[in-house]
Image (tube, rainbow, N blue to C red; front, top):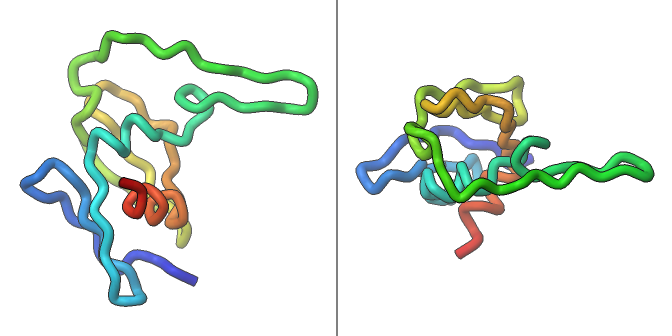
Length: 102
């Protein structure tokens, strides 16, 4: 199982993630927020019903600023954004994929 051994904020406004396989990935803060995996940001489908969020062109103050990062068990982190958004849980797999996507 792949998991991070360290996560650091960089001066380039990104997270640098060091993995237990000695690799590393860097994900911009903007990409993390734009790809937030929560229902309010990505939507969801349940049996015969779907929820598709409406994307606002306006961003609240602090939209792309991290307030803090909390570890969720042994599988994810939760990012608390300065605009108050805190429902996105970023699994190790999601973080790895975001870092590998260009």
